[in-house]
Length: 225
Image (cartoon, rainbow, N blue to C red; front, side):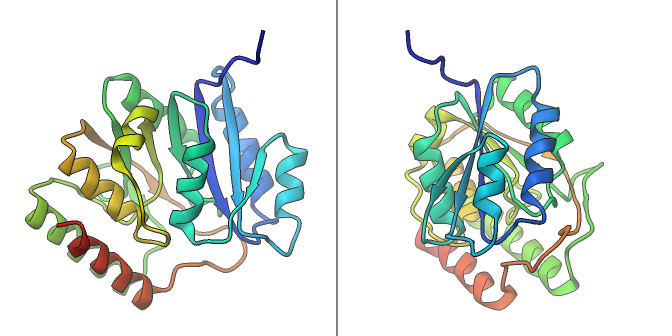
């Protein structure tokens, strides 16, 4: 008999996160201890020990040369779980919220998205310009697509595996979360948001570039009309 497929797959894009990835993986293991799960690290050829540390802790490590969207698409395609979760590698996403995301899917929703702007949500890592940009993008997507999101550019999310297949994701960079939200709305998937508290990056340099990535998100909004 073959190995039984895991119930949950956690997909983590990485680039030079050796100071953080070990703590992220240990946190996932603690939070999901009672579930069967796999951890998939999609690494952009890090120059440090990110990939090695992840392997030592039992994660499946896959290499991908693209941006965040490319890494998530690759990770989703390799995942075996019934529930797929996207998660950042910088410790901004708290592992103790994983069970809340899982509960959203187990309640019958196709996508359960963390929101920093619901009651009991929050963020320690959003300068004023980024906050204003996110609010504008949320308003624009809700206006154009008739949705009711409270957050948009946030990657802590869970999905039914079959739901991900219906999205036909194509974005290769930081527009991926916006694409997920828009296409889930257009496909009439069942969507729920749950409160999430974003911590500051624990160590290392962030990869987000406010102006260029903001333009990519705006382009994503209009390219999916």
